[in-house]
Amino acid sequence: MTLLKLTGVNASYPGGGQVLHGVSLEVTPGGVTAVLGANGAGKTTTLRTICGMTHRRGAIEFDGRDISHLSTDRIARLGIAHVPQGRGTLTGLTVMDNLYAGAVMRRDRAAVQRDLDACLQLFPRLGERSNQMGGNLSGGEQQMLAVARALMTGPRILLLDEPSLGLAPKITREVYDAIATLRQETGLAMLVVEQNAALALGLADNVVVLENGRVAAAGTAEELTAQDAIRRAYLGA
Image 1 (cartoon, rainbow, N blue to C red):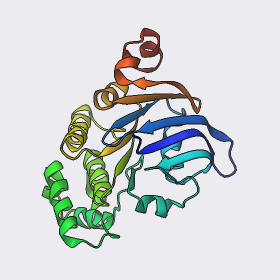
Image 2 (cartoon, helix red, strand yellow):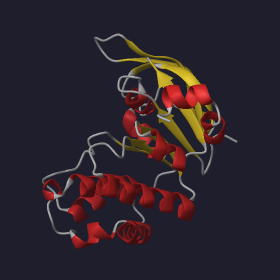
Image 3 (cartoon, one colour):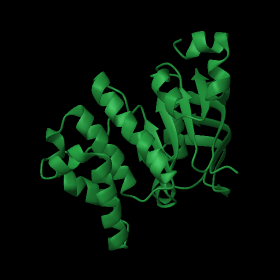
Image 4 (cartoon, rainbow, N blue to C red):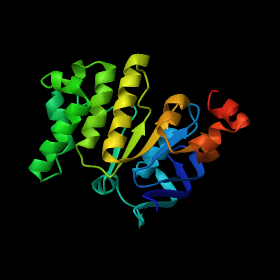
């Protein structure tokens, strides 16, 4: 069974050249798929394409439904939560208001409160800084806030774009430990874009390696790490 499936997806930006060339990948319910590759490989564009932010061709299915022609807001309403590179913190709002902003389209207040409590348990530092402005948080705290705000939408799948980018090693580990806990406790499916292969491989079931917008290698994390040529060329080992 597949929750998210891309088949032969091409993508480009307005006024620009083609970035993705026939990309295919899958995320299973409760599974984690990592998208690896160097800068400029097309990793971020892959997530943006799923969310309807590029000109795209090819098949994109979510829970068996074709979403390749839907708008970004309609895609989000289906339960696809995107944590963008750069975090997207609402700097003029407090931490708590940032979290409630993630739940703005939800009507079940009791469920929202449960999710808020779960987010603050997952990221205790956010509770300690609940009344601080988002723009005053450290980079690591803003990354935690971005993940938590996405969780407040009540998603079925989480798209994470370079969650380790710009973070100190200790904070990176803290963020990834929280993501691993989230997966273990909730079974939330994830598609993780990452340049740090070691981090992603420790979390993912399946891996897709992009090179110049094309799939250079794909398989389970175990299969790819067992292949010396793939490991040396793409996984930094």
